Amino acid sequence: MRVKYKKERSLSTIKLLAFYTLATAILLSGCTTGSAKGFPTASNDYSTLKWKSCHGSFQCATLKVPIDYLNPSLGQFDIAILRYRAANQQNRIGALVVNPGGPGVSGIKYALNAEYSINPKTLERYDIVGFDPRGIAESSPIHCLTAAEQDRFLASDPKPDNQAQFAQSLLDSQSFVDKCVAKTRNLAHFSTYEAAHDMELLRLGLGEKKLNYLGFSYGTYLGTLYAEQFPENVGRFVLDGAINPAISNEEQSILQAVAFDKALANFIADCPKHSDCPLPENATSAFFINFFKRVAKKPLIVQTSQLVQQTSYKLAKRLSDQSVDQSKREITEGLVVTGTASALYDDVSGWPLLRRAITQGLSGDGSGFAKLADSYNGRNSDGTYSDNQNDANIVIDCLDWQNKLSNDVIRADAIHFAKEAPVFGPYVAYSAITCNFLKKSIHYPDPKNNKLVLNTATPVIIIGTTHDPATPYAWAKALSTYFIGSRLVTLQGEGHTGYARGSACIDDAVDTYLVTGAIPAQNLICKQ
Image 1 (cartoon, rainbow, N blue to C red):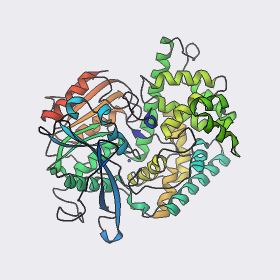
Image 2: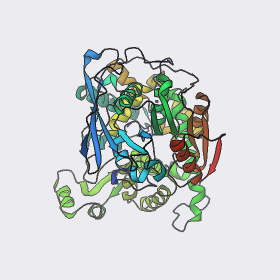
Image 3: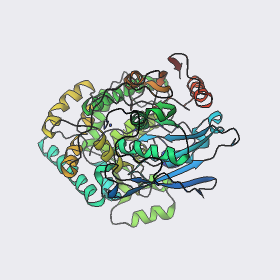
Image 4: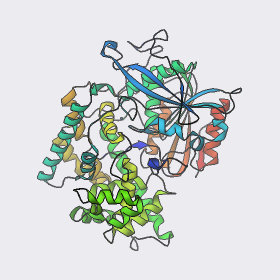
């Protein structure tokens, strides 16, 4: 199993669809002052959008984009678009394109919840436009694993402790890549760099003079790549939960592991304040290290009673009739680690769920960790998956970020990861192995690691949360120096991203900027 935590917005603090309950990176080229080489202009037919009613009060369209912008003869991808019309069309400012992150998370599903995820001041004045970037959900999706294969992959050993386990992890990674290559054509053309070019065609299709954009987490990277290629077309841009575009794959992995360890330490410190805290007195991170080791030897179990509670009687009966005994699903080390990490995305809703999951886990019951991990992985209660986010996450992440280390060096470096982040470091350390196999299979070029300072047509707001586990605060500070004239808005608190998570200070700054164009006079610090 390849462990690298998705950089996507935590959606648990707003009312969203069930499959988004809880938490649900460089290919750069030189900065230009015009269209990138090979990029089609407005005179081309790519940007035509034909809207039709869908999902009740929404509108849908399909955007045709070149698979390869340097070789249009290769064909086209279909990009799914969804629009929520502004309530005040007479005073409408324009379209606001949104992206929740990932990579691999559906912008369509996020836009479907515009009434709950965007504050009323902004919602009234903008059409909210979501799209599934190439390779994701409804947009020419990447396919690798079946649902059953996904189950095995996500439950497999995420931390090889000896040579035999390391050899098995290599076989698992190669098998994953082989299935991706066999099932998905043009696999080398699903990068975020290319998705940023698609977003320029989307701007043209929407008829917008400039692109207004609200990007969360990995969506900030998409926005950054767009701004680098089309700085003169940048409208009102909010980049929340920022990715540092001038960082190596190795640095990204270790900093993220350290951030998750810090978030876990904050959870441990907070736990005794609650009557349902399952941790022993004066607990440290060693509790989780030992708990994970215990689960590795003896997985937790989800019993039939929990399945009946989560599903209908008929579905539970059908599951029990299958050849595989679903009534005793094993919740392995990999799922427990993922469930623990996912809970750290949001202290308000995630931390209570983690306390309950630990309480159950100490008695051998894995239902709490199953709920957390399944929500994060997009797994439905019947064993199917809501979309292809797990396949897309791995492939796109590999295409976006350059890895320079061999698999043997990666294994050796795991010692350093464990020293810097004792809990999550040993799991994140092996995340680049799959990318090594993918690059050998499809021979995509190395991404360029630029450190350019961008002077955009409109100043940009960048938001960072001080104890963000998925996108460390240092990344937001770094991105704010990347954009000339930007403003860094800091949320002092826990969790992932800042907008629409309960801070009036953050929300007022963002909504005022989006509605009036007025950017804060200076960098702003807000409290949770």
